[in-house]
Image (cartoon, rainbow, N blue to C red; front, side):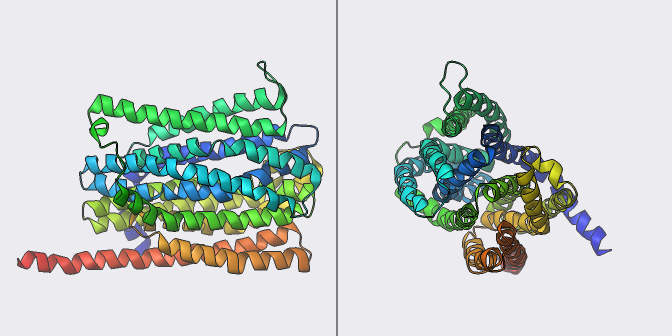
Length: 464
């Protein structure tokens, strides 16, 4: 009976949620596919494990810094969706303009921080063959920072006004651009010299510049066709709006930076075990990250749907949007857990023919299967809370559990118990289970709070 009531409760929301979420999910998968293609392309070089390990190390170090900048753009989810839900498109335009100014301001600082990470990498005792390819790769992708931030500013604006298909198109077509650029720059085609692993870093720059250009062009086209008033919006920065973006985005950016930081530390620790464990870690991380893109996209749609509902003062619709998104995310991640348990070797063979790497990466995917459901719950709950204007709760609890539970337990199992890379993944698995349960609880509490406040306000308003 309760199950039937719950299904009826979310059925009304499922169609508009999926209409918004599917293009975002495809975009997130396209985003992840670019990293997978990079790994596969460099993995076909002579020394597969060294090349894959170098891309793994360079990518994770870069994202520890860059993810903070992209996280700041998440404040646009809240501001734009609330403005759009309230029917104030002019206010949404102002948020986009100031998001662009924020991108221009923080890009140089983030690039400088990435360069400062190089001495840290050299001091970690990582195999020299891996390090000699990882640092040039890191320097190459560092030049993609500004296009990356501008892309995210435009993307959050478009998603907030229910335009997710252009985001999907930009990612799908960017994968073709990235594939051709990888082929040309890694192996030396189309008149370019063979650059090896570093060529993959430059192809990433090309792909991200293309994505930013596509979304900028679509924003201008949409405004020209439908006369939305974007071109009439003030071109000057509005510091209170920029500060509002920072205050909303900073907790989300900190959360994302600390989460990626955990995986960066795990990657560095696994790098001390040798090229094969590092390559297997990269393959398993790529695969788990790929499946995570689906609930992450659903979480982005939840942020928009919850924010729009609250913007028009409809807390019951906001509640229904959050629970619908959680049901969709949980259902998908249950399916991926089954795939990880039953088909790990077939998945790993997509990346590499190396038997040693296949064995090691398959063991890590077996561990990953246990946290799939909870990883999906935490991703969607984070988005739903962001739509409600709460970015602090996910930051505090996620970061604390990852750093003070997951990483210490994983390091102990890896080095003291002797489980190797699987030990680190087991520690992170424990953390993800705890984070998923915790954020689900806080979403339930937040949803009850704004629904109850609306009910209590209704009699007061009717008495006037």
